Amino acid sequence: MTISDSQVAKLNVPLIAQRPELPSGCEVTSLAMALKYYGVNISKTTLAKQMPYDSTELVRNADGSIKTWGDPDIGFVGTPFGTGHTINPGPLKKLLDQYRPGGVNLTGKDFSEIEKHVSQGSPVLAWFTISHEIPNKRSWKTPAGKIISAPTPLHCIVVTGVDADYVYFNDSEAVKKDVKMPKDKFIKIYNAMGKRALAVK
Image 1 (tube, rainbow, N blue to C red):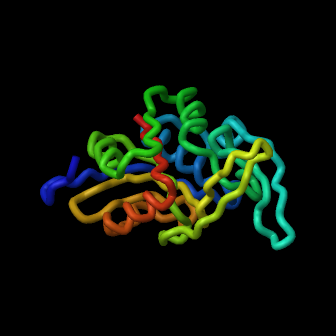
Image 2: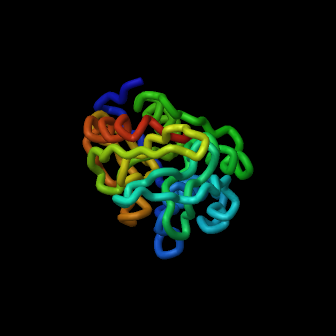
Image 3: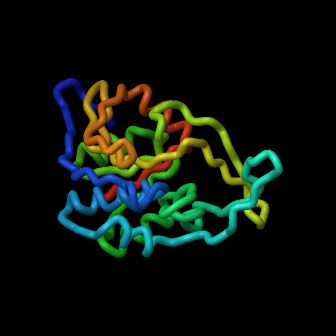
């Protein structure tokens, strides 16, 4: 699906700041925004307590890099209330389903799928970067030996609009509504972050 010049999809998704309560809780804050768009008023901290977790402890190498940590395909790695990494769309969808079934895990899907859902009136959580720039590569292993790709500085935002040239999104860290970014730049960052997204229907 492509958006023509005459088509603009813009959703009025409420803005919620993740700080001070959740310095690493962009995912549940973004989910709280998307749910509030539908009139489901659940606090970000309630969602943070209810989401799945991987409780694996962080172990660092001598140089400070991460040696072993958890798997975000299982649940949130670390804590959203302090030092944390992320939770991937799959386990986050389990939390979404408790409040609003029908969400779609878009992991591995091209940006055109995000465009499609937003144009149909559904906000989409997208795994992005705090810097709004291409991420730095990073990885670690779980205690079981699974390699976790963890580009940094990771963020999760809510895509609220698309048009022919731009993407618009709510950013819980910058506390800005409908941030405007050229579509080609957005796609490059989205792809570099592993094509992770969750449509809230």
